[in-house]
Length: 119
Image (tube, rainbow, N blue to C red; front, top):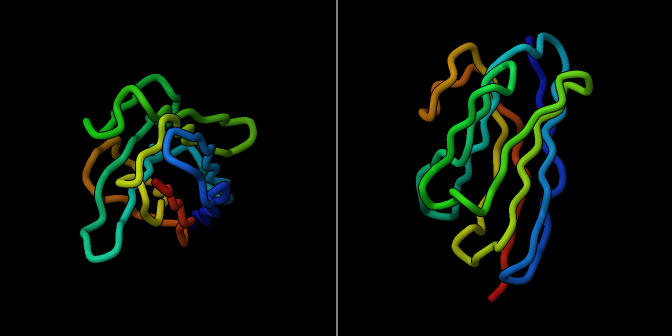
């Protein structure tokens, strides 16, 4: 069993930055990912990182602006978000699973953290 707790969300102006964290407990050597869901929209993939951190993948919409990383000693995954845009406003979810994938087929999910970008 894995528990995931996100933090770091908040309100920021367009062009600003935020860093999200996802602390994992239990078995933690999983691929980890970030997804987001805006009001009235489906949950969408943002970024993923393999269990060792050696492979990463990003959605085209965040490529060059967001960076996913992990510290396995701290059982934590991060999402550094720069040059934020109003369209990045969403609830951001952390996920963990066996397979390194861009689809939402992860076994474990956090409760989410709100990110709001004002124009």
